[in-house]
Amino acid sequence: MLTLNYRYRIYPDATQEQALIEWMEICRSAYNYALREIKDWCDSRKCLIDRCSLEKEYILTADLKFPNEVYQLNNLPLAKKKFPKLSEVPSQVLQQAVKQLHRGWEYFQERGFGFPRFKKYGQFKSLLFPQFKKNPVTNFHIKLPKIGAIPINLHRPIPLGFVVKQVRIMRKADKWYASVNIQCDVSIPDLMPHGHPIGVDVGLSKFLATSDGVLVKPPKFFKSLQGKLKLLQRRLSRKQKRSKNYEKQRIKVARLHHTIDHTRKDFHFKQAHALCDAGDMVFMEDLDYRISAKGMLGKHMLDAAFGQFRTIVKYVCWKRGKICAEVDARGTSQECPECGAEVRKDLSIRIHNCPNCGFQTDRDIASGQVIRNRGIALISTAGLAGIESACADGLPGIEVTQSRPVSKPRKGKTRKTSK
Image (cartoon, rainbow, N blue to C red):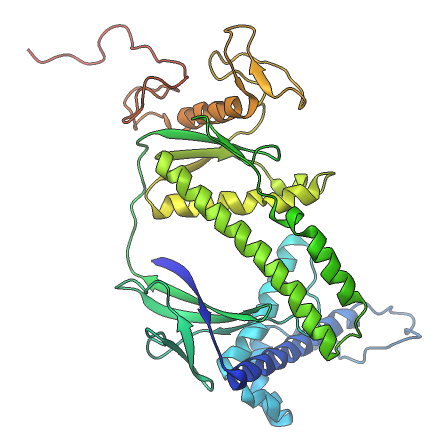
């Protein structure tokens, strides 16, 4: 089963936009009420046995069961009788808000931290429509229950054979989007190693450096607009909360954040397609960028968004039939790509100069070549090439001019030749 998500820009009118905003607030209240039931049940199990709390006392029976997902979903029809405003929202959309809470609760139980929090005003920014009787997307509109047809910018058509399973309506700043989930019952075979390999090294001084010698400067989207963002946030802090001027200024700040996010993602997609154009196998480092984002250069690491870039590269390679793999990142900048010797150097040294073989190149390019060699060694296993080799000259589409160790043929014959 192949599942894809296509995101389109939609343009609801004033009435439809107001209805969507009200639905989000109703779903937020249902989410908070369900979370309140869970917290009350948990707090009632924390009371001391020999005394009562001076501030609050939970009067809940000992045999009261935990308010699980099924219990709270079954209580929604009774809640609609007490609170008629809940009936304005489609029943399945309201159910998805409660299910979203329990997905977070299950995630909290698995990790042991990250207890679900109450949603403040304006923090519930999406609505999920889980199923449709027929395709709601046409060339010009998307039809939603109790809302009607909303104009949509269908910049790419839905492929033939795919069925629309669900639609999520999202609000970002003052813009509206529809994330359409489509599925097709097909099986995609695994790709075999083929073609030209490329090693990619990412960093702050250079956004990426490939084993072929391509260097890309970091664009620094957030840093370039940080002054303007600081000014808008300062003006926002002086406005009275929940006033009209506060809402206008809040939208200006949200628009700028939205612009930074879109330009960064567009840059990542363009670089990912450029890597796929240059080679057939892309290898990157297996690093946890969340750790480096908490250090002294955390702001610059978050601005570069290396984790998002790696995810986008994997998606683009899968979509275009290329191979993307991760290799061990330990010592990639301290190893010579030609002879494999260890060449110690600190961050101030930007040129790789091997004293053993005399190979000299840019430090980041040398790291990319080491990543490429490790990626080739990772995929060169028995059953793929016939001969176990950690070198690249046995793969199809490999040029001889690249720097890499050359494999030597085995002595003797591996099989008898037919006379």
